[in-house]
Length: 597
Image (cartoon, rainbow, N blue to C red; front, side):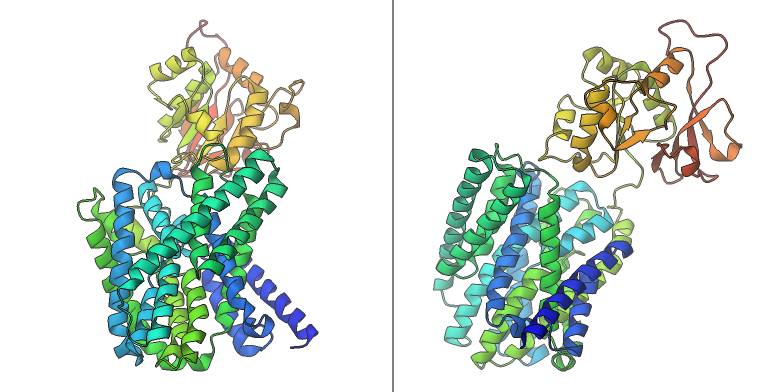
């Protein structure tokens, strides 16, 4: 290829990857639904995008290192504190039963479906055992199942990728060297050696990151560069020693860094997450461009049969066997049986091994990549379209009702919590002072555990179950700082009460973020109006216009979502007739006795 063609191919690949992910974000669908067809169509219409022409034989090595970076990032998101007791047992059984049963089932039916040899069918079987966080994660974000179910599926999807990659390398070497003889006893020992190499590589990666992140104390930018360099160096070194062991090393490194004390990795890593998303897009577009329409035609109908077999028989059986006496509800077990999309590791291993087996002359080896491509597209499309309604029918979806956390224990804050509870919300409160905590208990509101706010401000943690945080303490600087720190650790927005206009705080007057209730109802004004006798009112929006002497603070939607009034004013909220309004009433002419409320 000429230099101009190479530049055009790289630019087109990047443009397609970015455009598909942006469009998928706007449509709220998994990006994979757009990336694979886009790469396939671009590969069919032009020759400049084909990775084998752009990069030659080096493409396979780049794919391996790219997947290692993806798995390192996935490992950073795994918290061992949540993998305990029954959850750990369920994940372990899903991995063991899922890998074995899927491998045997696909290997048994593939020769009849595709006319391939037993060795080639074994290769297809081991490729299709993997799922992956790159497809499971976005689907779960869209479906929003309960926390226990989400943890199980994310752990399974993340850990099964390196296992599948190692098994794929072992089966590839077995079938390429010994034809159809894939059952040689020494393969178990070979797997153990590969696992050992990956674990050693992971230990080296952790040591290098400890040096760069803890000893040298690199900042966010240099620390991200160090992480990327360490993962690539360790993964490449392991792959040189033994094929595909870099995947284990990368996953182990990420898992260790996320859980060892002292690293304090943030829950949100914007630059690294952006890099991983770009890598995923580039890989899917590149790999799918190598699949030609001519290669799909003879395997299209058999692949549909294989997809139905995997979705309707294999995965439900894996889920049933793995969750017997697990303590999961029937709905949770059913949803686990309806969630096994294939992703980037299946595509990358198929791309890496298909050409080698075709060169060996194995029957049906040329069908490995198109079959894998169709299974990925079919499973992702099917689960993307059906996972949400299935989850709702099985009643495993988290409620859409807001669960606000109110931070502060002044009387006006506690009474606000009462008003939100009266509007039908599950309110959680936290305060540091013991007198304020006692006031919250006396009000009958749920008091968060003592270390909750420490958890919320821990950059490694996420507050599960809390959808919105309201920072309402009488310390404006604390509210401002906490709003910045907590923002990345909760699923929803973080708001703070506005400081006095003439305030001279160190931080509060200069910090951005969402400020509650507009410019007039700053903290001291709210507290003073409450002290003078103003109280909160809950009334239907259909009751008519809000009285002139009342202030709208919140709108509680009919489905339980809480929408606060912010600096944009009450007019920006636009309540519907079926909504509820939480108002601050007028100051009465006769003030209540001190200490009431």
